[in-house]
Image (cartoon, rainbow, N blue to C red; front, side, top):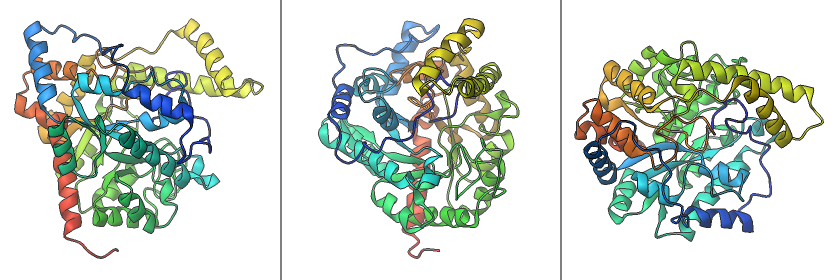
Length: 429
């Protein structure tokens, strides 16, 4: 889940405490819909300018490779709108159509919940949701806690559901909670989100209270290394990134970031120097598909719209959040039009740029499906679209071996390295 202008994705309300281990009837209907929409069929755009032979080859590669996407916000989408599961960007039918084998489920907690003391409860509820989804539909889904699980489930034709925690605030100042969440299946943690928390400063927050990581945050990185949890630097401030690079003994990931080269000055994306450091550490940048991450035009549009939306909300305090969203969208788009969507070629440019900098071993997919709303590029509108990406890579001259690395093998390599390091350590810091 990423901060983008309202109506590209509705700004999330305070987490509803009614979403607990005992799932509501509506939520079960939503989960059932995820695996019962075959009549609707895949909805991906046709591959732009792809010849039939190229499209066929792309589909073959996508369906015979392990495709890992490190950031899909399905769990929060189901809790936010449990009666609208026929929408969104992810369901089983479209995942199979796109060849998606290992979508990391984002266990996202809103930044504001830390001050309310509700972060851990929110995370627990979303983990329960993922576990229940796999338990309810074992022929389609299985929770994965290791690369070995992903490979085995791939051979079985089951979609793996590994989990990453987006925002470290559920750790709540207690390193023991890292062990707890590891035991619950969390395999990466994004240290912060839209506001600086007790672990790290945020790229979005002008209040950089720690000038990078807090002292506790440095301990968190070390303990994640010890346990075998991947450190995710998406969302952190630049200072925090460089401190993580100094501290981490294992490769680090950016689970859903893109190249700042194309969005100059925007701290949420990674600079060339940061990408080079990430690669030197053995890590991987997973490219975010949201248009605001991909082109300067979409990024500038997003920032202006976000500010205008905040002003509109302050002027209309009598309106509900939903009414603000609907009325602002109508007013804004009547004057400014919708977001200037990025194209598939624009996304491919990010892969090209990273590979030119550091080689093909250090880039992968972190789409942010279900997290960036109506801002996805043409040709990459949902999880059935990965063959389009493959076709684009083939058209640009990438080999099948390199494409397999991009689709999933790079991330699995990092995950394995983090596991291997944890296996050699036995005492906490």
